[in-house]
Every structure is written in C-alpha cells, then in structure tokens.
Length: 140
Image (cartoon, rainbow, N blue to C red; front, side, top):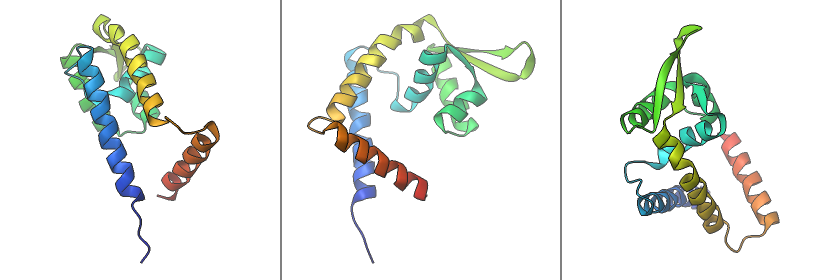
C-alpha cells in the first residue's frame, strides 16, 4: 500500500490558513466573519451583485451551502438580497455599505495570505505546484 502525507498536509495547510485569515480579520475588527464567507464576498467584490445560483456555480459550492452562508452574511449585514423583478424565483445577492467597506481589508488580507503562502518559493515552483494540485483535484 502506497501512502504519503499529501492529503494530511493539504488539510493542515487549510487549517493554518483559515486561522491566519481569522487572526487578520480580527485585527481589523471583523470578528464575525469566517473564511467560508470569503469566496462569496470575493465574487461580489468583483461583480457587485449576482444571482444566488451564479454564486454557487462560480465558487463551486452547492446552492444550499451558499444559501446558508448568504443568510449568515445577511444577518451580519454584509450583504442583502432581493428577488429578481424579471424572475421571482431568482434571488439576487448584493453588498451593503458594510460589505463594501470590507473590500480593502479583504484585499490586504488576501495579499498577506499569498505572500505568506509562497514565501521563498519561485514563480516556476508556484506554477508547477498549482499544476500538480489541479491534476490531483481532477483525479477525484
């Protein structure tokens, strides 16, 4: 049986990265957010408003998970929702002023995360690493 610690290390990296993000968020006063909200917020920073289904497709999460995360962001007043006037079945998600105020902090934390993640790693090594991760992902 062939074994290695790849999956274990990926899990540990995710754990320490999430802790890094939580620490950085708390330093700028956003103690109520979780790393799981990041993909939704990033999509909204880029597109300002999106249908719930499109968010789910963009971040590769099922719609029920996105609905739960969005409901939490609504409760925290980072986003708001409304029905699409052209299709009442469609829910549009958009940033509130509080959500918009988060964007510069989000970008700064993302940059710090990236710099920490790839400290001492060459551009070529990053490219190879990302290519291998993509292959592993596609294997599943």
